[in-house]
Structures are given as C-alpha cells and as structure tokens.
Amino acid sequence: MSDTLVHSAAWQSLPAIRNGRARSINRLLCLRWLAGRDPATLAATFNAVVYGHVLTPAELQTVLGGARTLPQ
Image (cartoon, rainbow, N blue to C red; front, side, top):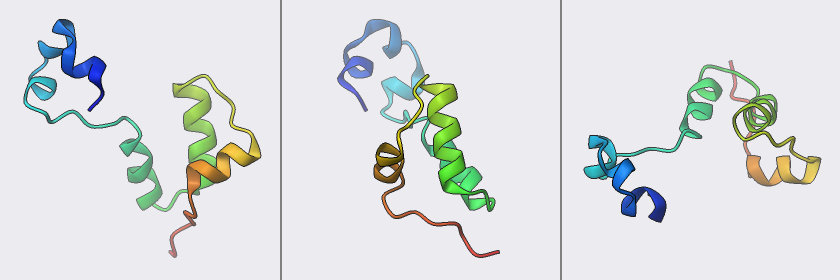
C-alpha cells in the first residue's frame, strides 16, 4: 500500500485502507485476462483509459513482463 494511503487521514477513513486490505486497481486486468482476453490489448486500453497514458511499444512490453494469451 502506498505511503499516501497509509498516512492520509482522508484515506484512513476507509475500512479497507485502515485494515491494510486495499488492492491495486491493476488487479482488474488479471480478471479480464483470466477470462481469455488478450493481455496486450487489455494493458494498452487500461493504461490509456485509467491513467491517461498511451503506452509506447517498449512500455507495453515492460508492463506485460512476458504475459501471454491464455489457451482457450
């Protein structure tokens, strides 16, 4: 969990933060990947929509870290 969440009074008002159960929004990608979606398309779209950043091909390869499409 980030220092911002841990030390912010506003964030500490949320039980998940207060109890150390906060999870990254990036975990949503895994759910779609496990459902059989293409990880490259998911990562590119997710970063553009959520973070407002279009990944370069090199950044996409770094984000994927060897991920591949799961067999059907």
